Length: 345
Ligand code: GAL
Image 1 (cartoon, rainbow, N blue to C red):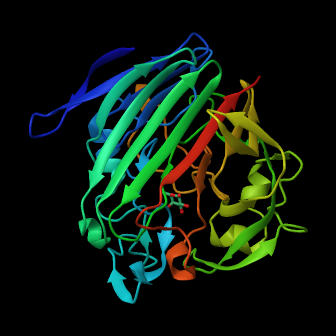
Image 2 (image 1 turned 90 degrees about the horizontal axis):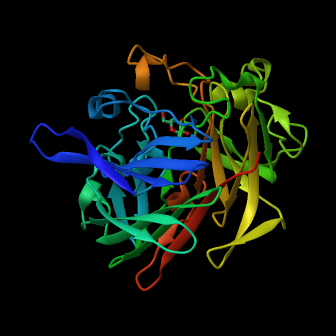
């Protein structure tokens, strides 16, 4: 493991970058936001991100960051739990929703970091205490996120406990490009998803129904090109999302055993560098094709940020879960989910 000072906060506090991995897969992780700043496959960087902390702070999009306490949206920032109504920040102001944990989410926290190595590979264990009342969520949550590189596997293991029942739904917002992040838009790349159902959303991008993907633009059960035509097609749901920005329910018996857990084969994302297979024990994945990734602020090395220049595969519970009585972490329970990105060119 290598570590170096990545940047400094205005207070002078140092932000450290940690590199783990091997000749095939290498990851650079920051203690700020648990951000995956670099993810290299056979020497090519496949993830969006910046050279400085300023990039992550001034340019939105949650590049490579850990997301919580509740990933994706909660309608109106409101939910009722155990008879108490909670109002969270409506930080997605255009739609009035709570998005990705609120004004200061896990993407902007300083995480504790510990390095571990074993026969499987290298691991970085990130920890955070999220106190009761932060962003108006109930309960103090103790969180542990383990990033691992084991051979050609890159994984994120999320663990948490709480002292009061609370909505809890963590993910990572990695923007991936299987031609390499310098490889342009993803229109020549393919996506296959083992999902029979999707969330149908309204114009606030909040699920209103769970519908079969049959006959829709979201039937990825066989590999499909992430073409410009698909992103801009006439499908009403595609138009609402300004392209692919939808929650799919993973429905498959195909699985792998990883770190003692059975993980479902959720998706295969493939480009010139080969295929990346996502396995998870989370019920859903948000597929977001960087539809809002625009603006002047450049990526690492001065690279242009472009709409559809990457794909996010965000393992999660379906958006707005707390308003359906879902995705509640209860006192005494352990939150324990894994996302495994397996490179298999
Ligand atoms: C995604 C979400 C998008 C957008 C993005 C951040 O998870 O589905 O609609 O908000 O995060 O720019």
